[in-house]
Amino acid sequence: MQPFSKSNLLCGCFAVFATALLPNKTMAAEPWEVEALLLYNSGSPEVNDLRARSTGNTRLGGYARALGILFQESREEANAFRAKKVFDQLFEINGNDDVGMASAYYLARISHKHLDEPDLESARLGYRFLFETYPGRFFGELAFLKFILVELYEREAEESIGDRLEFLEERGKRLTIPEMQRGFHRSMGEAYRVFELSEAKAYKHLRAAYEIETLVPETQIELMLSVAELAEAMGDADVAISALEDFLRTAKWDDRREMVAVRLADLKIRNQ
Image (cartoon, rainbow, N blue to C red; front, side, top):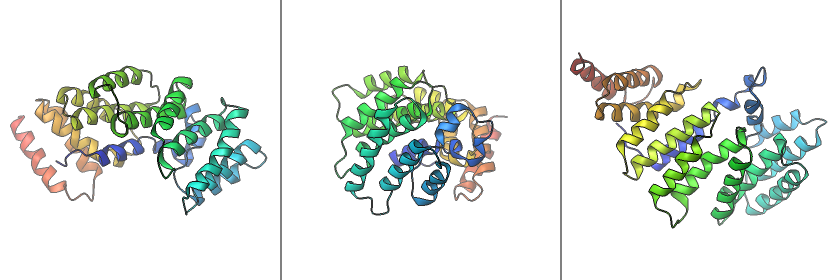
């Protein structure tokens, strides 16, 4: 099985909200799915689509303009500050509509990812403000997943890693959006393994993440392998077999398929 790494954790968290961004979600969508359409992580094609949807809506138009500045190909810090000015204005006018919440998220993200020297404390406080102020909303819950990464991996803290995990465990109970719940459990489970604190708690969280249905199973193949590995170690052979079978159904071109098939066959023989 492929070992855990921080890069796997980050990729897994990004994949959490991929399904929320599918264009066909606009019809009969949940409120958080409509909010999710304001999330952008790349350049011009997505932003151009947002500009097209902003006709006649000055706030949405301003938001699209700020994103266009932020995601210019040069990615210069000066552009981040120009975008920040627009996001600040949009949030100040109304911090409670979709554009206001999205602007607050990007203000935190600018401090986190778009400055030459990241301002991690500002990012951390911004993400925390979002999830405490907007419970049950897309950008509030997404900010909590980002907060987890900063809290566990990117800042020096007086609190022990165990205390930080305990704090995050309690706050994570508030999450309501399935994609965010999956991301929370995946992040926590992998943290328990990365910091070598508890295989049992890691399994509890990763199994919870695995059991939350997704429309994009291709984003979960590393999770399937992790759950299978831990389930086997915990003596939960049925779960291990199910996870490996899911992997073989989903990861059609993965070069680990042969190894997984051998492991699956062995598990089935031992579980007869």
